[in-house]
Length: 224
Image (cartoon, rainbow, N blue to C red):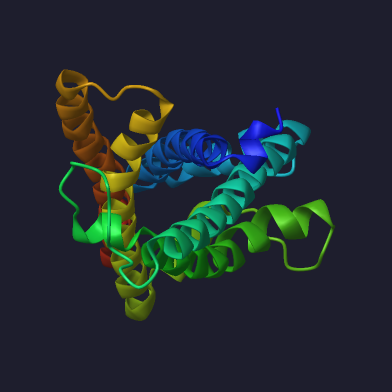
């Protein structure tokens, strides 16, 4: 198993698998957020009764956090490794696949998303699950209302929309690149995977953006 840590191929494989795992989480997170547009009560039931500080939710949070840590650490390691190998020409590549802006700036996009993640965790997760878990004063049990309050600020909506666009750029390259590294790299399948990756990336990012804007506009109140 040491090849997963020591070898370049192993590191790329771990980075790919962790990335695919996080994409599944983002699909789930986005789907749950969409519920907000239609029903505060249903969202609160999912956020507080099904998730909240229940042991399975805590375990799931730990697994997701581990996935993020692995993805970020391996991303840093691979970036430093690639830059060292390329020397002054940081965009040099032996691949026949045309490079895109997102593929050339995956680390920058990832760094921006990491900073955004800190903000997001403080605004949402820290106020709900973390405070409840450690029995801190001010823990929020009205997740839907908390989200509505956060997105009532225009600057927050703007920051989130920019972050979701960055996420789209990160995912459009990361999705097919991860599957390519995992072994699906023949010409026929790569074309299909890139199309699928664009669809999945767009659904995830657009879903998050729609919810952020809808909450700012108070659209959910019209439905319930």
